[in-house]
Length: 599
Image (cartoon, rainbow, N blue to C red):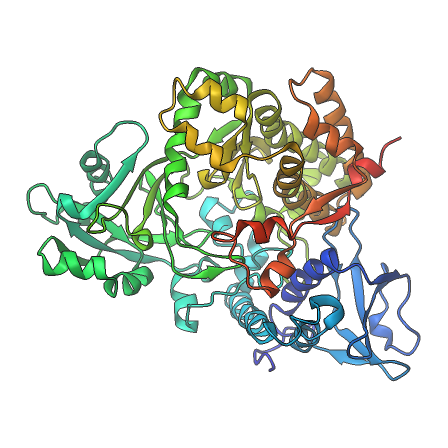
């Protein structure tokens, strides 16, 4: 299967380099039988010679060896590869190897996937790799000029949300959408800068399920949503009925559900059609943004994205109320006072079509999340800020520190270190304090963190997606008198070793180490100098007297920390939402530069 898009000046198809980088970084984290070499094999063409050498990867089941050229080797673990890739039979000549051929070979390599899995799930995996690569190629071709211009200070909040064209930087299928057609991808995906009106339903009270987190009645909450949109406000509803916004793609799924048909036949549900303002999918695809609305909307979508099918579960929906209650408690207020740069994008309410037995129809869930951003605010989702530029050029973060260096008349490396130091104080400190002194645990990965800039430097961090938040046992006991239902948080209880693993991956490997890798790949900083600065920050934080320093000690003292195994999760078709144990078992050790830079 070949990508059929016109090649840019480099001779590569659009998006090919980004897809290869995400695939190879995911593979090399989880499969240790490779070696880094300083020079390409002598029989390979001269264009495969790169300053950082490359990686030799044997495929013994096929009697083959791969040569993966390196444009940048990252001490923080996310490398930049160069194309073309090369393949050789044992003792034979080298030839070029495309990504889909590589994916097919890997999926059938018993040494990597195991004898039981070879050729068993491989075709689904290869199909997802192909679909992702084609989606990414289409998106880069469509958005190339915008990607090149994506930079502070001209870019605003929405530009960054819809600028995540390359998706997860360490994943074999960063842009696969199993149930979407090619037309659906273009119509509903942020990487195509799509926008659309919502479908609206009118429901009798008995046909609506709802939950809130601050006591406001569902009718009042939805009235506020409607009042923000003049076109909606002009639509009359029967007395006592409530409006429900539905993602237009998800409406197809709902129409065939028995509960939907039940209320429709009973005369308790009416379709109002596509109405009102245009909404924009954000980097998370199922979360929608409209600049003049007081809320963002997070919908259930019956689509598999990266590692899970994105249908919200009742326990996930309920967590928004628990997080809001925790922050309104005396303990939460003390945390907010202690960490003034941390802002939580609370989920104020959730709605769904009711099942006949009174429960929620999960496929119809919609969450109302705080919207603190104007369209032009310089507040950027971290995944886009750290994304590579097109065809290996510097991304947003590299261009940002270069602009700061020019403005301030200092070397780029100095500007990068100053920026990184501010990032540690503004964005990392609150999560470490919350964990160590308050027992609040956040899955603060790159798509859950929005970094607000003031004059180019980090000034505030916004955390979103309460589904990935929980609390220590001691904290749950403190909150019981203040937060009804907080006992449910015990369903997500972790040992210290599990906390180290999960927070080490989400907050550190996926987030902070990606910042270091992005600055290194842009040629803006020495990565080990940034790791040393981070070590100094952690030592100073510990010296302040943390109540529970175990996680900080782990970061300082562990030669290796753990990373989620996205490659094998994808290859084995694990759904993280319903099979969390499969995700937990996937974790693999990666080198910890914080430890290795110790004096």
